[in-house]
Amino acid sequence: MDAEAARPREIARSGAADVAIEWADGHHSVYPARTLRLACPCAECQDELTRRQLVDAAMVPEDVRPLGIDLVGSYAISVRWSDGHATGIYAFRSLREECPCEPCRKALGATIRARRSR
Ligand SMILES: [Zn+2]
Ligand SMILES: [Zn+2]
Image (cartoon, protein in one colour):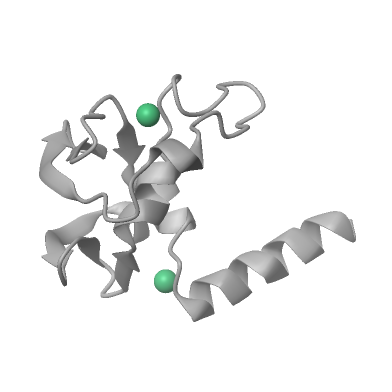
């Protein structure tokens, strides 16, 4: 991934709760709020070594939404969630890697297959 691909041009809300990022290379990503909340990378929500999800999905409201999005340096955003959680720092690089759009999912699938066949 080049630097352009992991640099957002604009970060905005999409619909009632979702987060949309337009990247410097022109790609557009929309992250459903709850998916993003459950993917919170903080130590409380995710095991730092195994990346196993520790957050209990049952404890996260269906209608969870971001109350505020703040830039962290030039490499990440932090999100204040309506369920009170605010410790997650989402690196742009991981956000871009986890772009939920179909072309990105397919590209990622192809990368994983290529790695496996090596
Ligand atoms: Zn968290
Ligand atoms: Zn994408």
